[in-house]
Image (cartoon, rainbow, N blue to C red; front, top):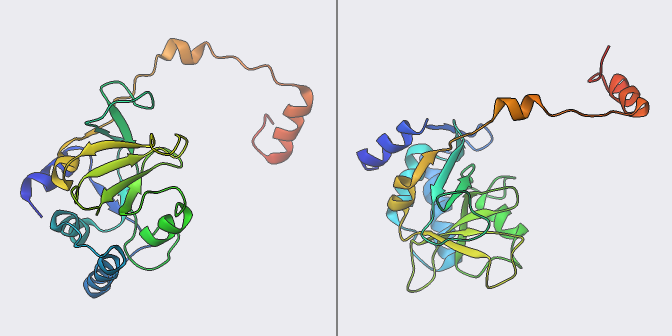
Length: 197
């Protein structure tokens, strides 16, 4: 994997390998070949290099990506949240094949999900003719035909467009939030162990 990409990932806090998806090099090679057979297309080498180096896992910090497209679902600066990378092996809960199974009627053919976006959304690597290697954000609540947002034209650009998310909390605003709890709700909280003692 290119040194500049490794440095970029370190700069934004790095990734932690998923404990539920520990794979040997041979398992990864076999799984990538099976995915290429399924999609009838070569998976871009930059994604393979990334996966061999980092595997499935989570960012250590909250991360966003700058998109080439714009849309109402985006954070300021045409940014979207990026979650965990999926496992390439088998039908594990957090694998590419399990995500494909979940979204088989919604995802356009030729899109291989590689990681989470916001809850229910996925980031996909295109393996479609004419746009192999492009990355798309699939927004599961948008109507078909308006549910894909182009993030980048290749995996390296995707990585270089990642940044640690800026969290802007207004402490005064947080401190001013008040909740009126009914006696019944307080009793339920006490019974659950989370309420006042």
